[in-house]
Image (tube, rainbow, N blue to C red):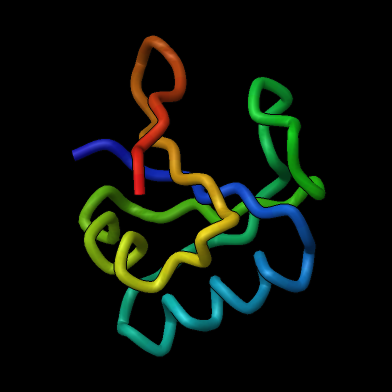
Length: 78
């Protein structure tokens, strides 16, 4: 399963989401947003693909989730 990356508009949202993932037992890393997804504040959260269902359930509406594939990023519709 491919990793996911969740892109936010603010740094505080990214940090809060990483904390929320941890409280649900899912590890996520705060990372610099890739240039290809640069419509954000500069911070994103990357997590294993198994976290996709948890991320979809707790993700703020204004965040964007992408699946990381070998050919690039694929947006996941909320």
